[in-house]
Length: 457
Picture (cartoon, one colour):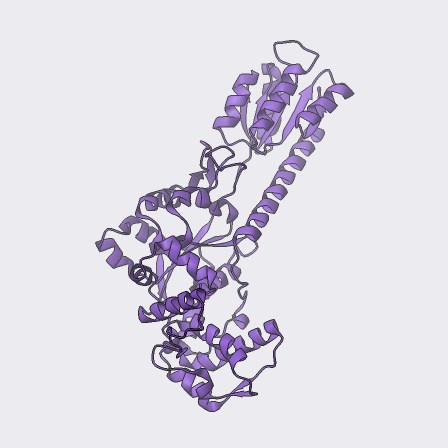
């Protein structure tokens, strides 16, 4: 993307000379001749760097106007590097300019090599700082598990999964938006990450976001970011998920849970490939690949006026269904052993083996919670079974109540009752998050907070 440089100098001959040099280097130039115009320009335009004269109309030697302007721009907290220029260079003015927030200092008349080197250095530093900020916020906000970067990390021996992976391998080399559908717990997020890791965007960020867990009032701030002072609690600039995923992949999980009023805002960004942070009038590029996932019937949601048809067609250039666990029973033994090994290492406990009868029992079970339920079962049985070999009866798989435990047990705490209720209700509605939340009288955000609290999501 072409970088835009703002030149602020009251000498039109200086501006013309700088334009000639910088335009030849591929920069986009915006020029003003007064401090007030410079301040307005950085507030209303996307500027990557500022070349700033130290003296305007007040006088020609003190640098007072330039230093005040540097301070005013820095007070906006826009993270734009400023290189100051003057024909009356002194150590004192240089020090004051740096203290006010300038990043470099150039004396007129300048040498083109020195000017271009200073500009490239500052742009490189900003890029590095932004990358560090994105990584920092990802570490704070995104707690998703690590995903495999190759087929070797995915357990998929069944024909249906082999076919799906072959299709995803082909699609990964394109820029198509992919919509993954299927029941909860089938591994849609893992497959979205897999597509990113084998795509041409792999060296950039994969940013997953659970759309059901974002309160409607914070939707724009979470997705597009905000600037300091945009609202009461906006005490510092915040990078949104679109900017975190710049040149990478943005994964929109639980797609059907986007509030209807916010869907138009998401659609606009996808169509125009631009967005504005809350409190800012400057447009930022949205160079991201979109992969989304849902367990909902979006066509039914469209008929019910809870999901926009135009957004649906924007997101599903191609739609792929991820099979439920009962459709890939060939993978169940390897998946169960994988989870046992993982939890054994995590908890430093002996690794038991699964008997032939136990494996048969696993393959005959209906798995309403899919892979997630299998993972939880293997974690539990690692603690409840004290033997070296896990037998079928140790699994306690009975109908749609895999734990076989009653909520009437007087020894259960309130949190244990709530967790078991969530598991049973989710199983009853076969992983349908919307129906489960509705049956429990919970809002979307309240439901997902509980799933996260009990590590069910």
